[in-house]
Image (cartoon, rainbow, N blue to C red; front, side, top):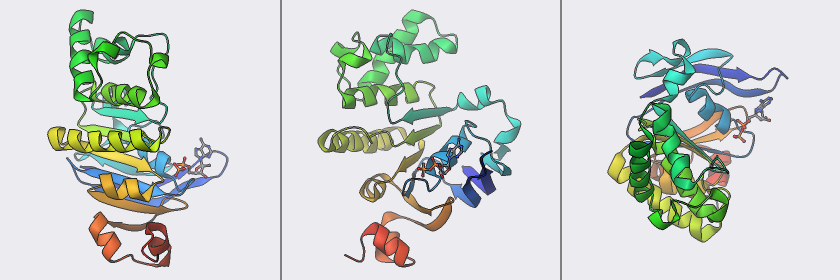
Length: 241
Ligand code: ADP
């Protein structure tokens, strides 16, 4: 379980990105942070793997305050997938994934075998494994990005608008793929999007944010749709249509 305790993040330029945010995210479920641009979603996500540290407050994972852990050690248990897949352009697809177990000391041959299995897991055809990232479509690159995220064998997978840059048809395919993966793997997924339809499709729990990381409403998609807490949420989820 990931627990935010009164977490505030003020950037050095004075921007208050997250203001006194407290919430527990259940294990083995997908929690989606959704809100308009600038509502603090990415900042919240990046605090979970200490790419960003809170100004005040704390975050616990399974009861341990992550502020006391070395970031490198913490990230061994946390996969991170972002919008532009983050692939190394000069490495073949298989090696982009294999570098992750190799960093942990797995020999190259074994790491490549693991990488091929992960590419199967995310539904990428093995015939593409020896290509370079720019020889793949955007959707295929995102699959490789997800395989990389899974390569640390994480308990927690952080996903920041991972399907934001692909066309709607591929996006729908990738969403279905993530739902399938979740049924099979049951990771603790924290997913960031500005798209409420995506949030409702993927989220076991959805956290609707306003500017400043202020929680407007938390609930299952069904709960929020049936009972939007205020006009802001009603408008955001389209319940007033
Ligand atoms: P979202 O992911 O919802 O678009 P972000 O978490 O990226 O929101 O940003 C929240 C707020 O913090 C925004 O106002 C943004 O401009 C600001 N912000 C994000 N990163 C920084 C930074 N490194 N320095 C200053 N302000 C930042």
